[in-house]
Length: 430
Image (cartoon, rainbow, N blue to C red; front, side, top):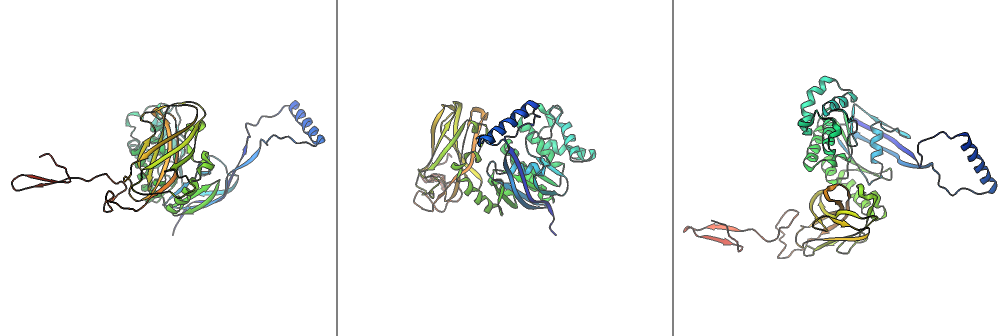
């Protein structure tokens, strides 16, 4: 019989916009405010000031169930309510309405360094986190070597974590959360901090956790990881459930929402540079989101983006990436090396050669970064296009794969007299 590990029923969370730290007003301030409001009522006027206690629903009537031994994915644009949901499930935030019931110990990885004491060493923080999870010291000792090996921090395990880089932080945090064996593991987009190799190890470990009968709730903007790892996926939009479906169906609906990013760029782009720059319109061969984007194999694919910067951004370059089925196929930049981007409007463009991409559906992600990746801006799956099935002598339908390499290889035939015959105008060295 299937067991439910997470049961969420009509969960809602309301915040008050503009509500800062509550300070008890003085007697004079109370009298002044009372006199002002009385005068306004007698005058028949009302203040045009917006209410400092305007209600905002970060989540509204969210309900779902996650089965034990499964990976449940949560996707959505920025501000959709994903992080609020995780904070409620982690008991960091109390819901306004509704309830969330989870069975067993809960481990969470929400932000880099969450639950770590900066003055303690990596070793001490492992035991501290285990104590928070309610584990016994003997259990931690048995898992300690596995945790350190997974995090690849053998040389730094007795160093205070305040000296760790963000990548070291997240490696240790994930290892602790994954190897201390909570029944429910909550993971946010924090894995994006790690390098590609570490991310793959994390995805593999999450799969092992689920196969072991435990439950993973995984929040990510990486649609490839969501498709590969998750059994069911919930799409949040505007704090409400848009759909709960099979991974590919939920991802397709998410891409439909994201394709309208021009109406809400803040809900799509991530990174520190979103505070001072924005992108406005992306076109593929001059076509924007209002029309289908069909590309013939013999066409060069021209990617063009417009944007604006509020201030000069030093050592910056725009990045174009093309994905298929969640796999990044190629990345190109608008400049060979990062250069200063002046304040004001700008355009960036790059081209993908004809005959390079095989038939199929592709998505485009756009962003940019400063030299050394110190600051960045990034938007995932902003547009899609389809390479059609139109063949020619230069485009061989027998070839397989996502990329169509130009030209052909060579063949060597050794003759009885040791002469070497070649084909395709190529040759090998003897």
